[in-house]
Image (cartoon, rainbow, N blue to C red; front, side):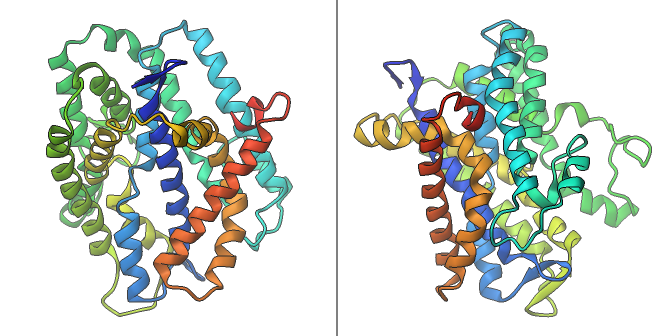
Length: 373
């Protein structure tokens, strides 16, 4: 599993795969987001392919959190050293690319640079109109902030105690699906102590991405080496159940009754994505399935050395920059008149290659760690 420099080989494969999954997700978004109101699905075919493909890709972000947990949690250094390294590798490149998105909107996006507005918004949140995909960095930094706090617990907790926490967390992944039912019955989506003046309900502190942080540690510590047969015995049913929930929920919440095209407010897309949210039951089940399978990939030959490993090292930089490439590439490929799934996949492949080459070239610059992480 380890290679010369003590790299965890399967995690390089994981980043290689998950990075492409993220780009493919963003190449699918134009087929249900857009129009004059915010949600637009042109045809039944677009609805089908969006559901079928994107529902299998939602674990991309949780996989990155699992990778960080597997490598970094519990902390192996003092807190100060940990945060200094994260600042250099994560925060500084994030700030640089955020500023680039503010000053230079991606070609083909149709957006005009709103430098004053972007700089005003930046101290409070990611700039939605310029770099909405960078929400991920804020979440990741939040996970990093929890690591020093939870590390002593992770070192001392028993296997049963950690498993019980994960069972409790798994229950919280059902809550986003449960909220529409609560609203239908009571008129409010609030659950167990939540209300307009208190968002911190009973399960607030044991929900969200903290579960993937603990899950990565649990798998590393207790899963051990298992055969492909046993891996697939768990992974296949996990994936089938997870995909059924994820895809079924999206299709259920899609307002198809009046036919296509569907044009609706942005909030409709948010509702449709209920079971696509990263910390929901279906996505969690698929994430576990993917992680168990990818964990078995230990090939470290020529392709790994020359392709997978460099991309893995540059995957964060590729993520930060990819909307600069994806926006014009998608517009170009979409003009070819090829079928919807081909537009999605070809756009993602070209974007991935452009970002990999660009990040590799940037890596030759002095102090490149401040640019590509």
